[in-house]
Length: 107
Image (cartoon, rainbow, N blue to C red; front, side, top):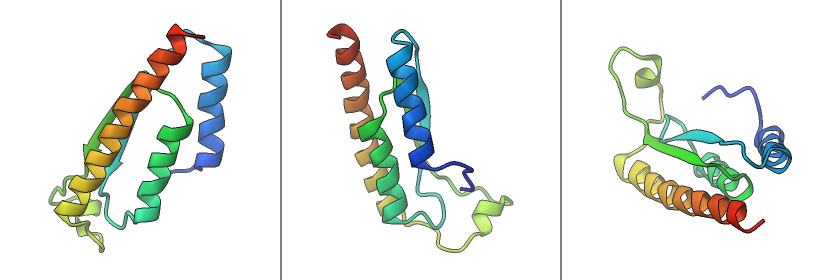
């Protein structure tokens, strides 16, 4: 999707913010099924949720829109794969938010 940062750069920033500012509220969004998204790409999103805690997480499935560059891209992801990845990330998101709230209460 053209991100200009890596997980190795992103996760430590979130961890540092959570550590140094315990009352900070952090949110993020994930899109699954963007054209050419590999299983490895999706696994990296899961790794973010394992390593960084958020207060709000939104998960979306890519939806092809005619006339957009992404609609013309090769390697469109099958709907069943998008759904599977969406459910996996949604469950992980709920667990992540629970861990964040638990950490706040008991630290």
